[in-house]
Amino acid sequence: MNLTPSFDDAIAFARDLIRIPSPSGAEGDVARRVMDEMTALGIEDVRRDEVGNVIGKVAGTAGAPPVLLCSHLDVVGVGELSGWEHPPFSAEVTDGFLHGRGAMDIKGPLALQTHAAAALRGRAPGDVLVAHTVYEERGGWGMHHLMESGEIRPSAVVLGESTGGDIALGHRGRTEIEVILHGRAGHASAPREARNALGLLPEAIRAVEELAGAQEADEILGPSTLVPTEVTTLPQSRNVIPDRVVLALDCRLVPGVEPEGLIAELQERIDRRRRPNDQELRVEVRLSETELASYTGKVARWRFHTPGFLLSPDDPLIRAAASAVGRRDGSGPARARPWSFATDGGWSCGVHGIPSLGFAPGDEAHAHTNRERLSLDDARWCWERYPDLVLALQAELS
Image (cartoon, rainbow, N blue to C red; front, side, top):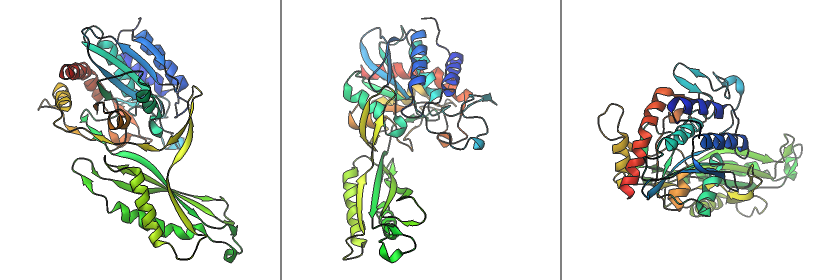
């Protein structure tokens, strides 16, 4: 141990992380930097698992239930560099903000969590586990593997996804669905010799809109949503009539809505709209799949479905967390509300039943944008409350 946990050093650590690009599948350099910091802070048993998650532990003093602090190593792409006010990997600090890709999603909070865990050495009655995962931005393969492996067994999880200092208690799940439109290719100069798969696109989109409008709303999370986000034609040539069109849908599903049922219902709605006796023009609805490869060399077939989850505002852990954190104006317990986006909590809580909540600085509106930034005042406020949060959770779990 040669580094004392502090807010200033946590921000310096965050700046180092921002300077290291880490798209999903290429988190290796960031993982090594995180392992170095954890070791320097005296965090014990620092290691990476077979998919590349970085794991460590601060041992508790009295055998209370363990709490996991969890962020992720990967970030989304930066897009067109000219659109950034501050270069995305410069980690500039200007006007009270830390700027760059990952500043608030999620390298800034990752650094705060890591230093907060080390600051609890000798204070926490239970183990404070630290795990920073891979592939969160592509559906949560890292957390899925971590939970399935049983390598760590927390009694509660605190996620470092942005909450603006509130307590997050759940979110809708995220599913990628593909609507495959099949036809017969042909030269664009002879359209009568082909069956243009694009002809089915308007009917497919109308069926999606119809199904989206039929979703029931959850009292806290709102309704499930289905939104077309991409159209791809095959072959991809402007002088060829395509025989295949892929319509991608981003679906945000409330707990209890399963993707298999949604796929079957959408298939039925589209089939009802199909032109009769036209066997060459057909539609297939399926869950999006791909092959993922980690920086460690592990390969897996992945289905793009991250489950949702929701804890009650009256859950004792949520109440304990909200009371421990409080509001910045001192007016009472922190606000408890859901995230608008999906997180690794879909795996830890939605599938494995481990109570999971979120607490971190950051404005959700800046996530995945070329304006990504983290307020240093907000970050310091959250940093100062992390010990009380962890201790309150362990007390409630005991």
